[in-house]
Every structure is written in C-alpha cells, then in structure tokens.
Length: 225
Image 1 (tube, helix red, strand yellow):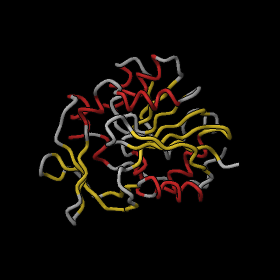
Image 2 (image 1 turned 60 degrees about the horizontal axis):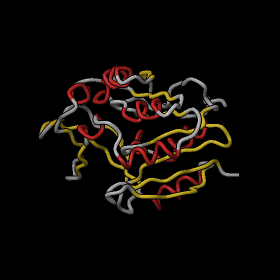
Image 3 (image 1 turned 135 degrees about the vertical axis):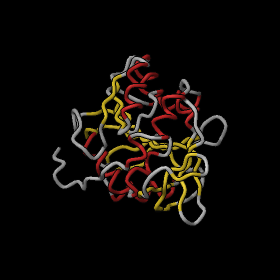
Image 4 (image 1 turned 90 degrees about the vertical axis):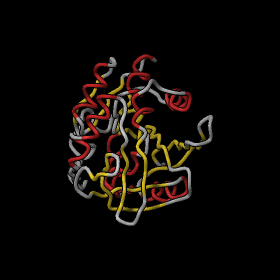
C-alpha cells in the first residue's frame, strides 16, 4: 500500500534521548507526561522494562504470524513474541530502546511509525500497547497509518485508557518535577472512543478484555469488510 497520503509526524526529541533513553537503559526513572493545566500521566518504565507479565502474555496469545510492535520500548513484547516463535519486529524512535530490544534477543529498528517501514501492507498483527495509541496526538491519523501496515485480514491490538476518555493534549516529558524537552501532541483514548475512531479508519473492534488486575484494558481490531 502507498503511504503517499499519510501525514508525517516528527518524533519529539524527548523520546530520542535524554531522560527517557536513560530510563530505558537503567529500567527505572521518575518520568511523567504533563500539560500546562495540571494533567499528569506516569510512565511505568520499570514495568515496561521487566519481562512480559500476565496481561502482556494474554496479548501475545492473541497475536498471529508476523507482528509489528509500534513503540516497542525496552522490548518485552518482541522478546516474548520471539520466544513463542513469532517473527516480530519492534520499532521505536529511541535508539536505546532498539538496543535494549536487540539485547533481549529481538529484532528492532529506530524508526517512527510515520516513516517508511519494512513490509508495509503485509504484517499479520500490529501492537499499540502502553498508551501508544497516543502517538502523534491524533488517533485517527495513527489508526489510518497502521491500516496501511497490516494486510486485509490482519489484526491490531490496542491498549486503551481505563476510563472513558477521548483527550488531546499538548504535553512535556518530565523527569521528576523538571520539564525535559519541548511541548508535543499526545492523545488519551478509552474503549468507546477507540471504537468511534476505528470506524472512520477502516477498522472494526472484534474483542475487548481486561488484564488480571483490572487496571489495564485492551481491544482487538480487524480491517472492516
């Protein structure tokens, strides 16, 4: 499929280096996304850097074939998928995340989802986990881009916000109380909002489930007929 009509979104600098890269490298860090109105989203770097947990394994069990992990972070999904026999590729704009994924036995490239990617239109499964539906700040743009990446019988698994929200914010990455870079766009999307956005982008929600603790929520989508 052609990507000629897809808007290109430049990855904000905080994801490329600095505190985020340091946190991925050390598997720890007090990182949050914050806006000017007091909204705050903690980034659970410790969990992201750990082995796949029960909620993650439930996602892995639903994956089929070749899997593209968008915003792979430290690489726990690529690691788990590879161990289960999947051909998996992680993409992340942070070189440290790519190194971490490779060190865990997976494959990864330093790339934005909005840049040209390997095997476009041929992936069996794509993942947007750990809030990555927020990438670029426009869920419909992102969902439309992912539709270009998977084939017509493919699968997309999205981790949604636990609350029924549909928000666009201008945020900064913070390390502790200190801002660590420029303002950029981010989105927070709950299950109902995801379903609305998906319908406009050629997707149909086919399954929803929660993690064992009830704190994490997921949806599986297929290309609309």
